Length: 159
Image (cartoon, rainbow, N blue to C red; front, side):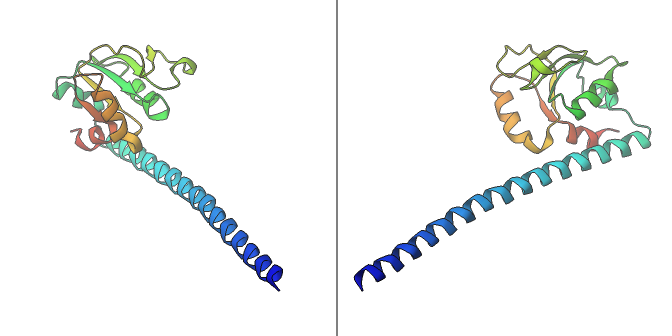
């Protein structure tokens, strides 16, 4: 009888531990999917706003000129960073360098560095991964003494 009770208790304990572990793993997977979904929604809304700005005949260079930013760096050289380089290509705004964790693997017409490099002073750093802006801003603020601006804020403030 004791062996039967011990077997049942052991089985229940195993099921409980297994179920708990399964829920934890499933929860992490759902959390990651939600995070990626939120990230892609933020990117979509950003690009939608950029199209709206262009359809209104506005240009981002006007924002930089209005604020006296002649030299900038761009943090994040994926799709949004590439579009920003292209947008400012024939303007008086100088993009001194791009910052990206994968700088060594990125081909760009601007100099690329990682966050670990000695960052040259610029008038402003424009952050393109808007979903992670707060973390990036905090890290950049420890290395540079200039405004750190989300591309999203620029797109909503350009006149």
